[in-house]
Length: 224
Image (cartoon, rainbow, N blue to C red):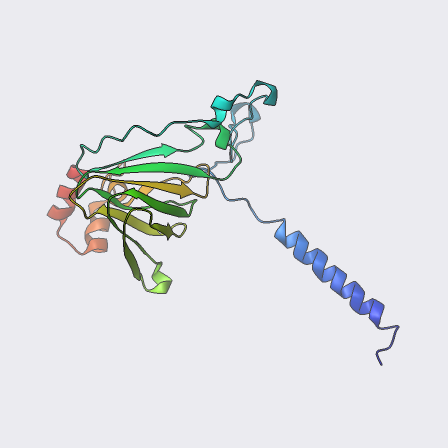
């Protein structure tokens, strides 16, 4: 039989460990909702981050929670796709709710090029057409490619931060809706970012990284 005098000591240790665990759980930094936040000492020159200033609840109307995405996006561009974002910038009622949405229109053979959302997982549902979709895992996982052909009514998930794409493999237009796990998920289109940065990335960096001739890099930088 356990000594009754020892039990309170175990109980105290258990309570202490639980308290420590709880303190760790509540002490992490919240995920940022912008690319960066530079510290400033003068609050008069500061801006509010991780959300927007809140509207007086008494002045809120139903329109603050409504936005129509019925109109198809213009796909007359080089990639043949258009993303209509519905983040907190377009729909104020999303503020602090941690979700957003996007409508993606595709011309026949149109592409939503490889990109990543630094602050969000994406949940895609096909409304019309047939899409070839996929994502690539991180370096530590061997950069494995996961792909699937989706038809009307199919859904697919792109994990947070991973590079992914959607290609219309049909000869007719396609439409998909994406749910995102952040009110401001952010988007980094890989080609635009690497070859279209402002100012441009040093060509020596890109020629070595992509193992191509400098003329190729120069052409791509001019293109983007």
